Length: 399
Image 1 (tube, rainbow, N blue to C red):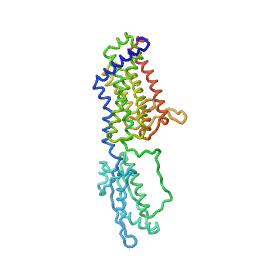
Image 2 (image 1 turned 30 degrees about the horizontal axis):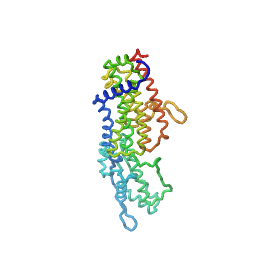
Image 3 (image 1 turned 60 degrees about the vertical axis):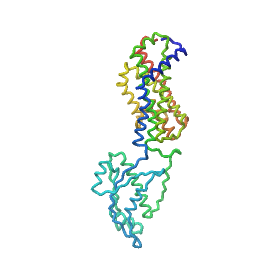
Image 4 (image 1 turned 30 degrees about the vertical axis):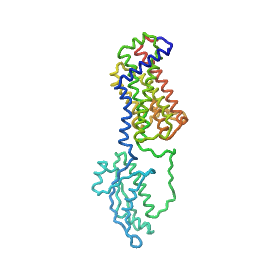
C-alpha cells in the first residue's frame, strides 16, 4: 500500500464497506437488536415501579385499655402505618401480609417475604404506659423482633424501611417529641430513579460494544477471504482503508444507539440530560470500540475465531466496564484527588459514567470533561496499538 490519501479511492472503499456491512444482515441485525432486547428484558423485570419489599407481620399484640376506657390496638395501627409507606412519587414501598409464627421461616426461605416482623403481646400496653407517664421501672421495654435472610439482597432495604416506620409510629403513638428533624435532600433536581432507569446508560453503551463484531469482522473478512493481498497490491493506503471502516462503523454505532434509546423511550424512559451530549458520547464511544476492534482483529484470523474466541474480550467489556451491572473500581494509583482504576483502562467504562451523569442527573459537557478526555486518549492509544499489531500480524510487507 502506498501513502497518500485519495478522495475517489476513499469514497470507493467506503461504499464497499457499507455494502458489505449491510449485506451481512445477520451480523448487522444482532448488532442493532442486542441492546434493545436487553432494554425490553430489563424493563420487564425492573421497569414497572420502584422496588416493593415483601413484609410478613406476626401480630401478637393483645391491645390495651387507655384512659377513658378506650381500647387501644397499637399492633393494628402499626400494620396500617406499614401499608401506608409511599415514595415521594406516591408508589407503594412495603407489601404487608399477616402471617402465623410457624409460617415465617417458610416465607423467608421461599423469598415470599424479605423481612418478618413480630409485634409482641405487650406492644400496646407499653405504648399506653409511656403515654400515661408511668415509670419505666414498672416493666422492661418490649422487644419488636425482625427476622430476615442475609442472603436475600432485598433484606437490608426492607429492614431499614420497616425499622424507620416503626420508630416513626412509636413517636406518634407515644407522644414523643424528637429533638431532631431529618431533612433528606438530593444532589440534583431530578426525581428518584428506579432500577431500570439506572441501567439505561449502561444498556446504551452495550449497543456500541456490539460494534466489536461488525468492526473486527470487516477487518478479518479481508484476511479470511484473501482479498487483503489485492489491497496490499493496490494504491489503497492503510489510512484510507481504516478510515472507511471507521466511518461505516460510526454510522452503525449511531444507528444502534438510536434504536436502543428509542426502545427505552418507548417503554417510558425519559432522559434528564441533553440528547446532543448523548450523541457526542455515542460518537466517541463508537470510535473507541472501532479502535478496540482493530486490536482484537489483530489476534484473530477468521470470522469463526471472531464469533468464538472474540466473545471473551466482548464479555470483558460488558461486565468489567459496568455494561450489565455496576461494579466497584479496582484502584491502581492516585493522581491528585482522583483514583486511577483498573476498570478505567476500558474506554466503555468512561462512556457509561458520562452517560449516567448526563442522562440520569442532567450533567453538561463541562461536568464530564474528564470522561470525554479519557475516551479520546484511550481511543488514540488503542488505535495506535491496534494498527501496529494488525499490520505486524496480517500485513508484514506493508511499510
